[in-house]
Image (cartoon, rainbow, N blue to C red):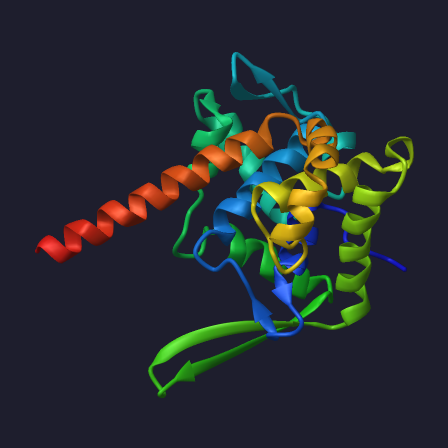
Length: 224
């Protein structure tokens, strides 16, 4: 079965909960996809770590071939800015407007024929966009690759599946990996994490910062 190649695309499809028939992790999905894109660039050798910062390597046409639109866009941003930490890049994912990761990845998947996009207005006013995977078996296969990464001999786990599993765990994507399973396979997840480099740890830091920021914003709004 053909599957998407890039980590942001895989993660986006896994964030779709077939039982609820909708995407999950709405408040943090932009950050999670940003982490997936950084990992994809790192895995391809288009980024490297230097002093805990993300630094672009020299342009490599071969490594960039087949890169998903958002990862290519993010690479351009990293090349234009001074070096920042991995958690900085994750935390500064756009969460609104046309430049947000969710929009880029969704539209790329739609253009490639992996999902159908449905737009409607709630109460005739509020615009809402939903997606439906064209072939449910694609998501099933991606979820199965995460399960296999947890249970197969470590030497047989594809590095891309190891990186995906580490991101799923760091992002607490419960539609794929329940709290019970994450606890049971904690040791294995730690062994898979190096495939994603410093990104899973940085994702954890960024998510804490996001949560604290949301709490402070709420407290500030309540005080007004």
